[in-house]
Image (cartoon, rainbow, N blue to C red):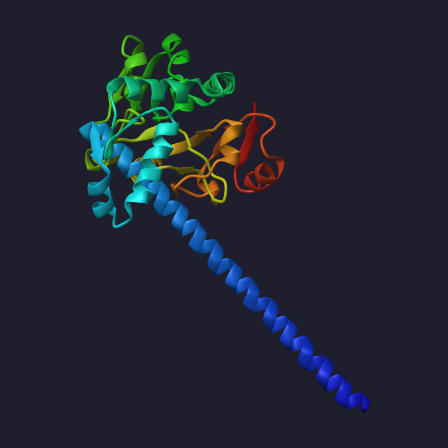
Length: 289
């Protein structure tokens, strides 16, 4: 075989190898997108199941399967997921939830990583003005900021969190609770009324939370309605401060509400995932506590 023929076959197989690599990479990306989409649909459905339980107190497996267009076995897995969280009880053909279950679920979320959350809350006080309008998000980490603010006065505090509003009700600050639909799992308000109220004001500092952001290009939450509230807040805020303890680096969520570049300061705990923290630090100011 002549050198020119050998060169021809070498280039031919090299080109074939390159095209095969490109094809396989594309297939992997498609599979990854499909898996991520399926995960998002599962989380969205489970959140909606929980919202229905919070509103009605009971759900039927058969009715949920028809509503979401999935099998009854899929709905049973969704109910089993929430049962493992300790916030509902399975019944024959469905599930029930009580106010005691909701209270226990919320207290459990707040108590997770309490020391880390309280440390973030104390440190974040330095970013709040002496006078002005401050928005406090719903969520277990941001709610830890309410108690230290009992020692402050003269602030106008706007919040979508019943927990925050209740804590600050007797403070020497002016407290406004946004209207809207109440979510039982977060005790925060969402919906058109909430967004409308937020769009009518101007906010000096918004303190926001996140459910987790693994595999996202920004902070994320577990419900589209929560994401819309946060977006409305950020459109009216001069300064956006994100508080998230280090456990959120290892958790994924349903939908991102902004990109990292939209956050002015991201405050988290020392010891957070170094690689991910490094990537985030290229887009926003990262403060470790």
